[in-house]
Amino acid sequence: MRSYTVGFCKIQLFVAAAGMAATLGGCSQVTVPMGSNNVDTPTVITGAISSSTDIAYSDVDEKDREIISQNLDLVAEHLDSGQAVDGLALPWLNAVSGNSGTLTEIDTNVFGETGCLFFKTTANTIAGIKLYSGTACRDVSRKFAVTALTVAGA
View 1: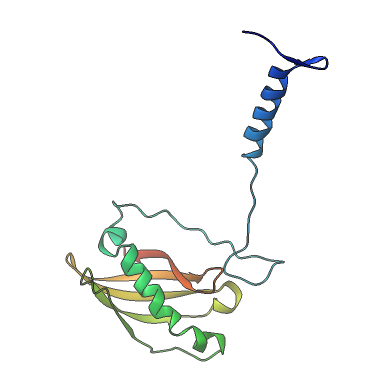
View 2: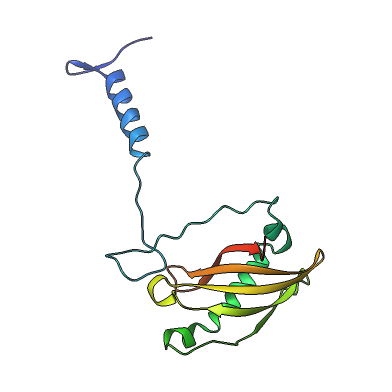
């Protein structure tokens, strides 16, 4: 293999140094706060990654969770104005899968600090009717997204 030089240095050294810099640059992290406008103490939203072996995930899929989130967005203006949502029941329906349910027990105690709320929902699926406990948080676009959903009592 022929070796080329630039000045007094061989080109292979430049290529190796550039490759190492690109590799090490990929190891850095940048974090952006989500779910809160408070930059001083940003909200950390964490949760387990859903999988097909998770009972809640296999019964209530991503599209169902999107519909649940959209229904929670309907009460967002009440939440922003500080109005209570106690006793509110929001029905939801996924017309494609036929799954349906009712959102109840919407708990907004931590909404002001975190942008998240807790809820319960029934889900009438092919597997039967079950009660689920969930958490939904606002994303950067101020829309709710279901961040956790588990079978209630499990």
